[in-house]
Image (cartoon, rainbow, N blue to C red):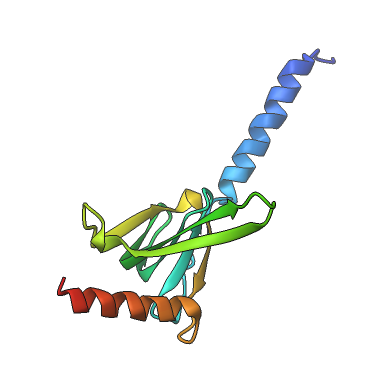
Length: 137
């Protein structure tokens, strides 16, 4: 005896099976800890923002940065159609609300990279800290 099965029922069963298999294989973010061996790390977000800080904690939902700096970039175009990229580098703790730490949602992180000790970012951090100490903040 042959049963008649609706095509929509077969499609629904196949779709449910695929979803269950994907959930069972753990297709989420990896649980391996982030291993940055430098003092500072650069965190690039999907909205173009870049934060630099000391990576304190990381889990599947958020990372925690302390001693945080923000890099803002924009394009300046003059009348001759020349384009130049401008950057500002600021200490987040000097902002109006003075944040000591920053939590970043991992869903918006494109990549995390170490900041080399001899890099231009490292030099900017040293300069910014020296200026802050000279101001007595």
